Amino acid sequence: MSTARAVVDDGGSGLVSFRRTTWWVLAGTVACVLGFSVGDWVLDPDIQAGLRALTGLATATTIVSCGVLLARRIRDETPSAIWLVTAGCATAVAAAVPLALGEFGIWPIAPAATISVLVTFLTARRAWFTLGAALLVLPTIGLVAALAMGEPNVAHAAWMPALMVLAFGPAMVGMLHAWQVAARLDDARRLAGQLAVADERLRFAADLHDIQGHHLQVIALKSELAARLAEADPARAAEQMREVQRLAGDALRETRALVQGYRRTTLDAEIANASKVLTAAGVAVRADVDADLAASLPQGPRSLLGLVVREATTNLLRHSRATRAAFVLTPDDAGARLVIDNDGARPGTAGDGSADPADAGGTSGTDGSGTAGDGTGLVSLAERLDAVGGRLSWVGDGDRFVVTATVAG
Image (cartoon, rainbow, N blue to C red; front, side, top):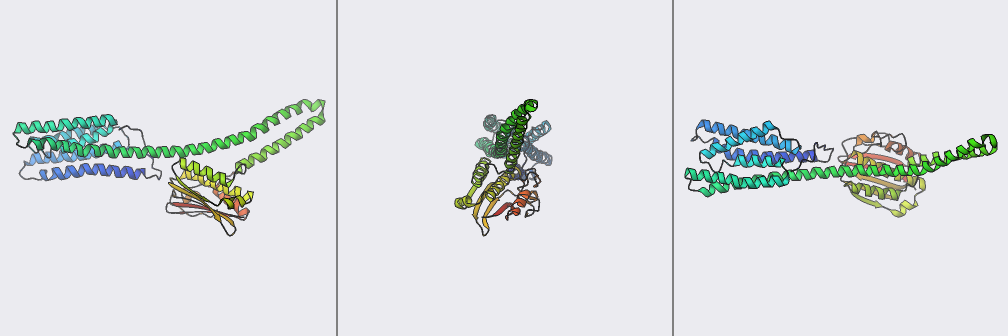
């Protein structure tokens, strides 16, 4: 098994719970099998008390050592040399005493469990190779000991160690491999969300460059021309400066429109882009949009709904661990109603345009506060919708977070 992750941050994705469950299953299996199998033998009064105490202590130490090593493995931490030595010594004693007394059904349990735990720190190929070697070595030890003691049932001494290796080895390697796959998938999902946000930023930067680059270049040229004409032809210089003033005003208006989302922002385009981005981030998306209704809305309300879609999508990617999302546009008494629903909320409160949506779980403003000063946070969008007779609200209910926007038709 390779150790690709250093630290696992659950962030609402369920990995901490999965990690805890995996540890309990594996460590509990070791504890139960060793405890029940060796426990009866340790309590047998026909066996010398000192040997029983030594074997019981060694078995308990083996169980604790395996639990600690599994905890370090599942956190992708390097195994401690102290615990490795402790596990090795305890396992040797827990196996040697029953083997010396001819207990061929008990002695291989501790070695098989410990070896199966230790191989999880190896690469996949080395892990399976080591388990294969144990599958040969442990039965050989049992067979040789049985023959040396004159045990009539030598087959039992050989197949019991093999059975223990087959019972412990694949279970340990398989469960930890499943955990590792889940951790890597969560990393990929997180990365996809970050890439989607980065892609949106690049798109915004490209639009800003298109606006500012052209205008600033022309302004620079006309300013230089006006400076040259200032003494020779003041009238033409003044005309050029008026042109510079007009260009600066155009650039300012287009930049404001870009920041506020008016430039090339349509409801259909924003929902399509949101679906693509969320799907890339591993979120199942359902879009139920009345195309005729969307086309019939005035430009202002349609653009505002597009901004709501963009803001909710950005917040969902940044602040939630949703697995599904839905965009539903339906007719409303006032005009149109847009509902954006996801299952990635954190416990919080409802909002009506006055509360901080970060508290409702799952969304907040682009700056994390919900009150972006550039007019792109949910709170600011609610104020802008109120100004045109619309309404924006958000509510968290368990793991659901719903944003609802209404506009006049």
